[in-house]
Length: 267
Figure 1: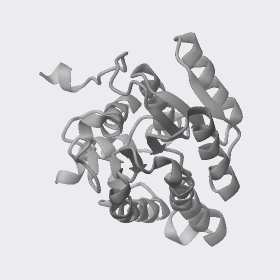
Figure 2: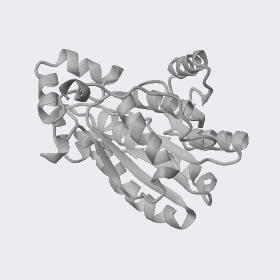
Figure 3: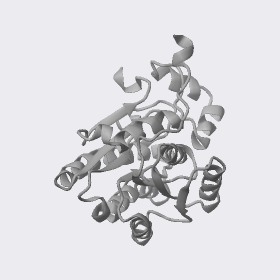
Figure 4: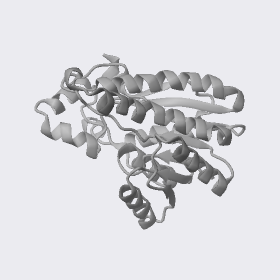
């Protein structure tokens, strides 16, 4: 039992998203990269983007090596309304509609309150975690209407709890805003057949999160101490939940926040 709980379920081929057109932002790394790959494995036609052109192209090339197709626009800055519109127009022109939007792209500055610069840290984080979700949803909305589509936004366990040793003030504010915004979007989308849900992960191991895990004394122990299941998350853990929320299996689920945090927010 312990060995089973310490591992994650790897991505695998299937048909749960067969024929769906899915826009996934932030495919260059981490959760966005993992979801783009998993969606392609499950039969979706994936259109991705990233501000980091080299990272996005690496994801596209890695997919091609597995005989998977991920289409990508890069570099693309989703904090710019014109770029958000260009992405959604591109997806719709290629495929006629958008069935799934996954807002995985984000930027957050992790700085203690007394050291935080208003423009560089606070405003940039809220732009990179809130504005970019708003702009992507607004640009995709006309293409999501009328055919049972799904929007998946990312909140965070940090929208509900503080984590000692983590200077996450701006990040907590941004993810709390995404959580509240998504409920309102679900209400506005329901008459048009658009479902909107959030995923709230605890710490998932990515290139970005490995730095504090490996370099801040006591941080890994602090993170694991909050988890009932004593391992950090992997992109595939989030990917499986995203597959469910993108699929018709979740057609009666909207305005829901899905904690995927090894029990961290339950105690």
